[in-house]
Structures are given as C-alpha cells and as structure tokens.
Length: 69
Image (cartoon, rainbow, N blue to C red; front, side, top):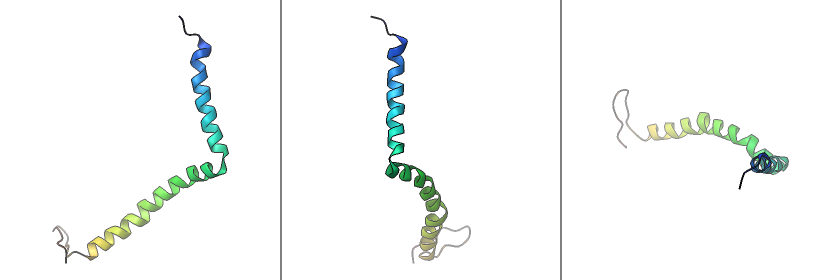
C-alpha cells in the first residue's frame, strides 16, 4: 500500500485548523496575548520583591552567605 501526497497533507491542515479555531475564540486569544506580559511582570516585579523579603529576613553581607535571623 502506498501513501499519497494528499494523505500526508491532511494531518497538518487539521492541526492548523484546530489552532486557528482556538485563536478565534476571544478567551483563548486573551490568554495567549496576556501570557508573555504576565511572565515579564513576574520576572521584573515579583522576583525582586520576593528576593528583597528573603534578604530582609537574613543578616546577609556582601560576599558572605546570610543566616536566618
């Protein structure tokens, strides 16, 4: 049994159609567009905040490891 070119193209178009239909739904589109923003906010706001709280609870000095107070 041989495989024709039409058989090989079918799964790719079905997958592309499924992704396209997901992005047409506004809820999924909003999630896809907000995800990079949330990652950047987490990187530039949440991480320094948590790191600052952890440093405030230790007696860390430059070049020395901190110990919990």
